[in-house]
Image 1: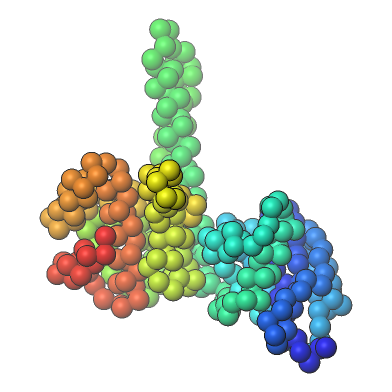
Image 2 (image 1 turned 90 degrees about the vertical axis):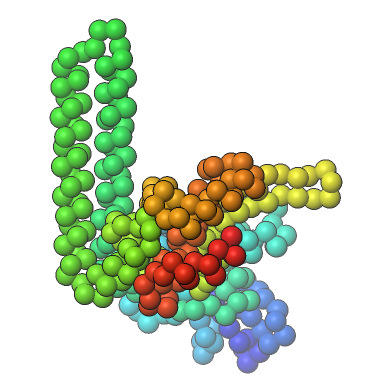
Length: 343
């Protein structure tokens, strides 16, 4: 029986506090079977227990692959641990798993069924092996996300200040304190931006790549840094369609016969940091670049929704950053004639 088994996969549904695991195998006649399930803590002690369980439960001399979703930052520690101990690890974009899970006969979605779906996906697909991202991208992501969070706090403080000042009798002490908070957050944002710039200047290749992306209209250093940080230098991305889906900028439609005809809209199921960092650059590109401005006008004339057209420009900017990175070229306005036909 063991000779007929050609592959085994441990699928992990990763949460903040726990790892839900399903272990199964694939036979030569393409039959799959789940042979073990267990839950472990998402910490070093849990990782060690998971490793010991794998050694006991897995089939010797059969290739073993660990598959998990890219769930924020919660999957990183276990991925690093397993890779450091010689396991073959694959990290899959969440939209791929969710799309695959819809094809399965699963009536109730739980952590256990999710782990089994990940296991089956790993058994039925040939997945790229994950490799540890470069330290510079990890550090860059930490800084860009920290900046985004502090900007959010400053925005909340500004809204609080506006509400306080709009009252009939504002509390002067509260106004003073809120202004102090705003100044503090502004200082923090400036310090983080300086750290990002310093990090970029220290790495010649990163500096070159960011400068390359900044040749695109509307794209600045922080936007380029965020895109590269959130994609680990496009490590898990194979094509533009997958990139748009990862960012949540892909269009979802719901149509069935003549009775169901939902409006197309972006999924927003992907990386929100990518979508957020591209909002202002898209608006800037529409104002500053005649070709993008013309594309925007054409899209608005087609359906009359400016925000929808702006999202299309966001997606196009992201795809252009990806294309330039893969081809290792600077932006050329004439090249956009080719890209224009894809919208």
